[in-house]
Each structure stands twice: as structure tokens, then as C-alpha cells.
Amino acid sequence: MQRRACLVVVCGFPALAWSEQQTLSLYGLALKDATVNAFVAAARAVGATPLPTPFGTAAALDVRAVGVPALQRLVVTGHDGRVAQVEFTVKAYGEDNLALRQLLLEKYGAPLTESARPLPFGGFGSRSSPRGGFQWLFDDGLRLVYTHPTIGDATLRYVDDARMAQFNAPAAPADLRNRF
Image (tube, rainbow, N blue to C red; front, side, top):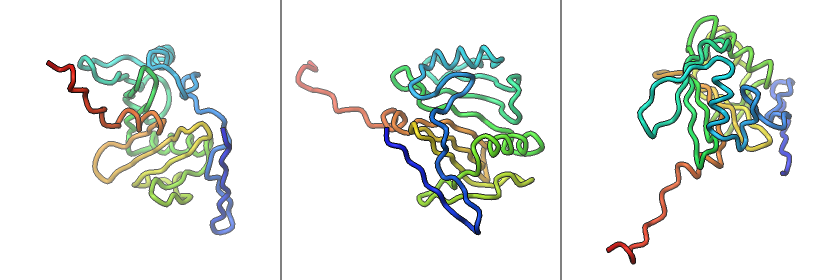
């Protein structure tokens, strides 16, 4: 795997655009190529409780008791049995949200804006929660994305872009020769 690193200097302050961390993990489990069942078991082991979901939909868990500030609900999207995306619904205001953003800054550094031209964003740890999308990029092809839209839920997503592209790809056309 080729290592990517980019050092950006804005106003004399260097900001690391790609995380130096080799693998992104959550609940003690490396997310790259983790199975959905193993991830759900790891989340339940730290205190997450399953929420009822219709058959065939993504697994959902209540993570308020896990102890991470502002995280409320977790939805795991899988493709071919592997984790493609982990999405948390985040409390969008108050001290809990500020504590979560400061925790992210301490662990991963300043984020980049989520846009066609990602730029370092220095106001992520400010008292008021910034609106927009912010991301951290990792060497293993995963991204951590914090989104706070003007309208709607604030979310924190761990995304495997390659697996999500496969998940969202259109199905191959059916072979019509043996249909009837």
C-alpha cells in the first residue's frame, strides 16, 4: 500500500491533512475488512444495545450508555458481510457535542472540509458547533466524517469508500437467455 501524506501550511500553522495512524479502529476492532457480525458483537460488548429494525435493514444500536459524549444511535451498513459504513447520530448542540469535537481533535488533529477541494479547518473545536462536513483521511482508505447540516441530524461516519462504491453500484444486467 502506498503511503499518502500531505503537509499544508495555513497562516503559518501546519495542519496534517492525512492521519499518520495506520488503521482506524472502533471498539477495539480494526474497521478495514471487519465483518458486520464481529463489529456488532464488539459494540454490544462495550454497552451498546440493539434497536428493533425491519428484516433486511442495517443493524442499529443505541450507544448512549457506551460513554462517548454526544453519540446516540449507531447504524452499521455492510456489503458482502463486511463493514462499509458505521454512522452515529450525534447530539448537535451543547457541552456533549463540544466534548466530542474536542475528543476528535485530540485524537486525529484538525479536519479537512468535505468538499471537492478539501482544505484544513481550524474552527472545529470552537464553542459553537460548525455547520458543514469535515473529514479525516486514513492510510487504509477509510475516512472519518463529521457532518452538521443546517437542517437534519448531525452525524459521525466511519466510511470505507471502496466498499461503499461497490454497495451503491448498479446491479449488472440480468442474463435473459434462460429466463423462460
